[in-house]
Image (cartoon, rainbow, N blue to C red; front, side):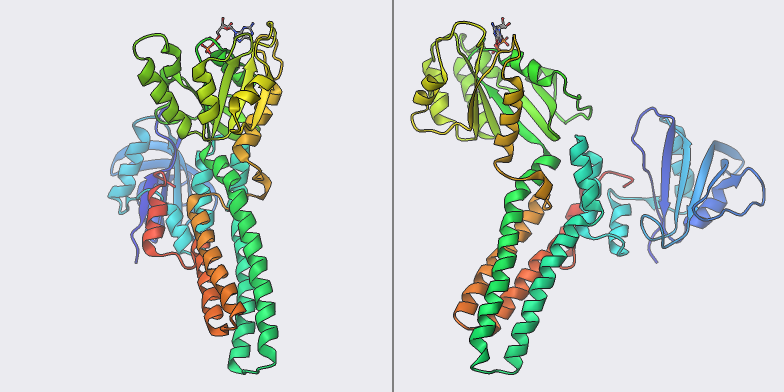
Length: 454
Ligand code: GDP
């Protein structure tokens, strides 16, 4: 029998209520040991909150609500008990300690969700979406995770797997009853089916970019010479935006990173601070650091002053930036000395995703700038069609694509038995996404990333 696990499920810190969650076969026994319902002798009905007190021996620990949820209709599919006690630093810890002393052990990160997966209530992709939902930084990202939690990704993957299975069955029937006349027809039809799955998967991989950006966020790096209006534009972009409240590790104002919600995409905008001190001795280091930031960006936003001529540094940035580049020709409210054509000429054949005229003073072009940054980040991927949401899904889809490619080749060579094996390999690769064919270490690695109490 598995251990009964317990953990504080709510965030650490001051708050009205904290929830302690317990799961496993001893949960009900633990409840009866430490919880005294206010109306004595009242039996606790499953899934109904009861008001009472937590006691340890003769000491009253807290006054709280408790609920017993009988297996299997619970989060973990096991018996679950939750205490809603007072929040803050002390009480929740004390209730947890009482639960542990009564026979539970402390849960590992993600262990509740892992049990839901092992209990067959959710698949691996759904489990991942729980974590994505918790860490979502925009409403749109949260909605996408909720959809995935509902099994959207898994349904799409299963549909493709079913197609493959039909084709495998069809091939195997021909292999069992070989017939020279039928084989070419079988091979052709199977190849068509395999290609259809291939096309659907290629599309999914293309759109996965949008899914990853929704959950992991977009890095946009602002670059440009001092005084071109980078900070002013940054402020324009941040204005009227719903502030993203969650703290991203390492994000502080002094490194000039800001978070913004760009039509639902969580964006981390960083200003290449180094370029600000271009006049002093640290110029070189500053520019190097800025270039490094630029290399790692999803999108570069180069801000130029339209009232000045282009400098040699700006010209080289235009030519050399390797990530999608959005150019803002700023200060259009002043007399222009550099226009869109000058920027185009300076690109010398390099590509800019968009060149826009902006003014941080009048607000001209700011909405277009926002739109251009959004499109440059997505590069044609559609967030509505993004059902692969992380690197693990994409890798599995790519493995499936490779196996499908080899199946198609085998079908062209009329080696039907090899093709059937390749199709099975593709089926397995897709199964890794939902967990049907995921290995134990992959499963462990996924749940390790969870937070405590989930
Ligand atoms: P940064 O050094 O690139 O961050 O530039 P700042 O945002 O600090 O702006 C430098 C100066 O240019 C400030 O005095 C701003 O008020 C001014 N400025 C910024 N954008 C515009 C603009 O669109 N039009 C005009 N006229 N002035 C601007």
